[in-house]
Image (cartoon, rainbow, N blue to C red; front, side, top):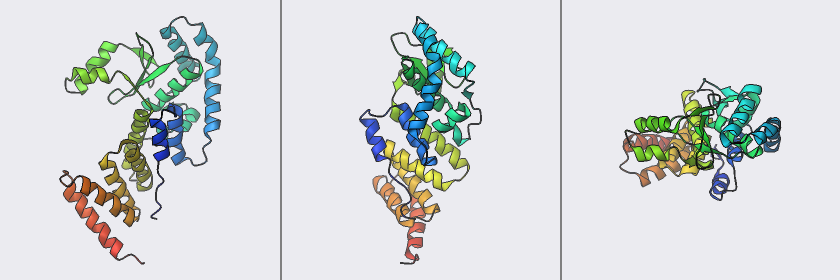
Length: 275
């Protein structure tokens, strides 16, 4: 049980080196749940989805018209849509999104971006608070909601909404309308998965997700969560390592007392384990 997770370090390093795109990161996360997943197969599937739209996108004269042509193809002809069942983890795995023709805001954003790449239409990811968006590249970008049929969204309205969400911080709201990279997309997908699997108390999958989140962000609370899920799975030494590391780095954390109690329980369990 102590070999309870594998590291995502190679993926995190590759993201830092800008050698992985959005679809690569999304497929790498999906491979945790589907070990036999073939990235090559799904890249080919994405090629096939994009190909029929290429002529219409090329014929359109403006970025807005090109985006409309791509959205008409994806949401109209192919029938892709957002899935309102936010607790379904399948919405977070790109292979499932391609196969089932539905997904979450962030995975639908990944899908639209990757199809845009294939038809030479640069589309950027926007980490809007609570709901991922995309926009066209360039000086006058067009914002759209990839979850809701790719409908255009006025920037001013989005900035006002973000400002309300961020307690009136206009500068922060403006930043939330700027493009984000593959790391941010990966973290949003992983956080969505964490929410889904937490509702199901699925410690095995939660442990993998927390491992990925800790590797991608370095946030100590993800290491603490990883330790708690390891303990639930019987990996006591791994749990002790993570919980000790968290308390050593943050001895005055608001949850320190509760974590110490969990750590004490892990040590007691370790003491009675057969050698």
